[in-house]
Amino acid sequence: MTKNNYKGAITGAAFLMATSAIGPGFLTQTTVFTGQLLASFGFVILLSILLDIATQLNIWRVVAVSNKRAQDLANDLAPGLGYLLAFLIVIGGLAFNIGNVAGAGLGFEVLFGIDVKTGAVISAIIAIGIFLSKEAGKVMDNFAKILGFAMIVLILYVVFVAKPPVLDAIHHTIIPQKFDALATITLVGGTVGGYITFAGVHRLIDAGIGGQENLPQINKSASTGILVTAIVRYLLFLASLGVVVAGFSLSKDNPAASVFQQAAGNIGYKIFGIVIWCAAITSVVGAAYTSVSFFRTFHPVFEKFHQQIIIGFIVFSTIVFVVIGKPVAVLVWVGTLNGFILPVGLAIILLVSRQTRLMGTYKHSIFLQFIGWIVVVAMLGMAIKSFI
Image 1 (cartoon, rainbow, N blue to C red):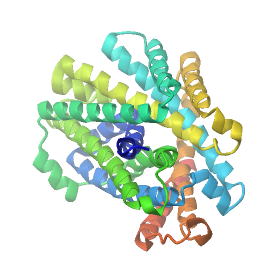
Image 2: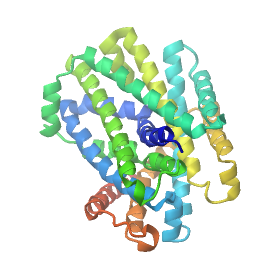
Image 3: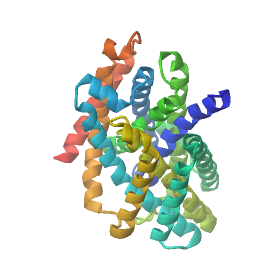
Image 4: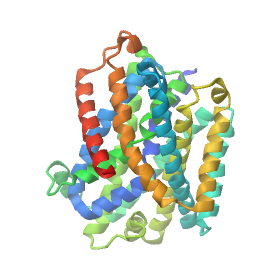
């Protein structure tokens, strides 16, 4: 691997994780909670970022240093556990990809006035094009980086025209007037839940950047991904806050679109189309790539044809959306199931981190383990509560 490709893979993995986290649901959640909590939502974002850091650094370090994918580590820990983890990830990734495809279709509808389903099909073809390339990994890295930067620039423009009370937002980010635990859990689940947690680190392993000797690069990639997600979320919060404080009400049907439209008129609405398309299409790519990475090591056939399986994954998600639409009951059920993936996946990784036979001479941070278990208990409690 050349030096440029090496650097590209490190930042590509970071942006793959970040853009996978920034999906259509991310846009909606952030705007809805801002409307409810106003400036105090900044504190929820801060807390969710800290929980994100605890989760991501644990998973990225252990998985990348071991140089094995999460499902193989789980099977090494307890035979069969990796198959269970892979099943949960794939089911969750497939269901959420239906929503991601729908989001991409909505973006095209806003931009060009075409039917949502037609837009979804065109978007799926674009995503498939990435995996038809001989250098699919490199193309995917660049795709995630370019669209990730585009989202930041466009949302920054909307923040500028929305004129939010920045000092007030910063003040309440540190000292909130009100707090919502459910909002925090929802944000953490939506940002690092399910397949998203493993998207970047599996890309690093595919690129050959694993092992204890690459720990500084692993930390850099994980931190960059967390930072990009945090920047986009905080900018979106500021834009939403500016609109709400100005006295506008957010649309119940499409709260994220109303933020952009109220802030910058028709241009803002078109910017929303670009942002939601970027958010959705990168999530389509991230969900398909990561879900398939969870079973490609189970059989040589899966490894040999993994790019074709990724394409099949995208095609299936698109067909389900075009034929059935968004199966709400299934999505709700899988959403609940997805709440269990983060605590289960993180718990497995934390147990692996204590196994010398799997980690060699690497000693995982006691502090990271401690805060990791706090996240496991908190997320598991909320997942059980939502399931009952």
